[in-house]
Length: 420
Image 1 (cartoon, rainbow, N blue to C red):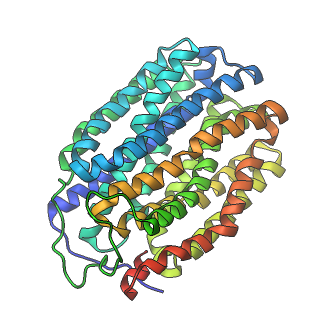
Image 2 (cartoon, rainbow, N blue to C red):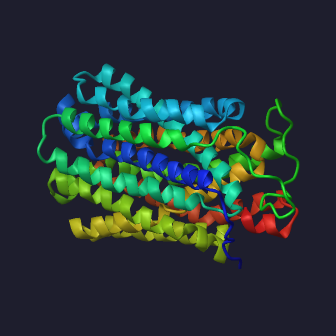
């Protein structure tokens, strides 16, 4: 058992930390502005009931394709230019990319703009995680779970706002997506000024919390076989959690609304409560990992996810469904931060590339997930949908701790072992 180390840091690093918090607020906000507007978006396009499930599933798939491509493509750009210019461009373009979705009326235009939305999301997510690892190095302790907590906070607050707006605009998401997209654009203009440049790095010291990492890859070379295997292990863990999260994000509102006969606004709030629970869990993630170890936290999170989905499936009411969503969000909360922080700390020189690999595998859940969910819903009905995240997180709870132990073999010092 270990404790979180407190390290004094200068004002510019604190501002960079605040900028990273706001960046994660944007990612979560944009994700759940999209998600809580799904039912009205489907109405706008005429994708009602089961007949519209397949078309909407393909649009969700397009968002996933863009996210995976953006995450993988941006990795080397981050290592070459640093996070600041990449985040600045994406933070301004990403909020604006959702506005056209409020004006589309045809499937193909919606699919194209969905791919753009996903491309910018994957790039910004990877860039902000790389910047978060850079900020962590100044604090010499894990703070990534706190960053991801603000992803959930942004999703909760803006998801609730979008749910409220869709209660007034029931035929089109033009107004909700435009108003909230512009609001997030303004946030991007503010926080992009405080980001760290490529060469803003702490001085090396014997007490650096990242010393002891073995065999960093040579500059300009591809990842070594060992590094690649470690990144794949992290990515597989992230894949399971993201497939579960996307099942709620893309279909959770429809599931609650149609299975439990609730209003669109209430169903959207159920998704927002899921995100709010994830925010609460991530507030304590860094301390839980320091106290109990990463493997134990992953096992506990997976177990809570299984409990939440089981309650949603067998409860049979809107109340139990919402409580189940809350437990599922609480369980998912710490998985992604643990994967990404460990991936970025393994070789700080190539943090962008390594996080890009992990994120690409994780975001591939947005490719496999929508296709798998579309098949399940089309052939077995919406009522069977939640068995999918139940199965994925059950496997993660079973095998995740074993994979989490494997990366620890790359560390030579006790201090680094506690940090991974």
